[in-house]
Image 1 (spheres, rainbow, N blue to C red):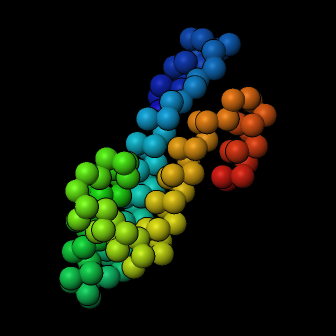
Image 2: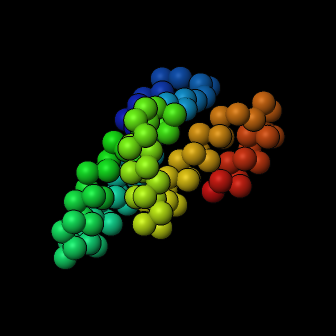
Length: 118
């Protein structure tokens, strides 16, 4: 999922279609969207050291799948974090919706789901 790869494929296999898988799309969303919002929120709270620390330390909590949060304290911490920060809640919910885009069985269903997500 990078420009150099896409250009090489287009050059050497002009009829090929590049298809991105769920894992790599979600990973890229995590790196480029969730991390960016998390860092921006931490910077916004630079004068509130305790709140800033909570957000800065929440990276893996936000990136992990909710079903992989084994300990109850992790689930509670995530719920508290999302309840306290609207921006993080928004990108976290968008991640869940992004995952759901891989479930439509038809091309039209897929296209409609993407348009709605966007």
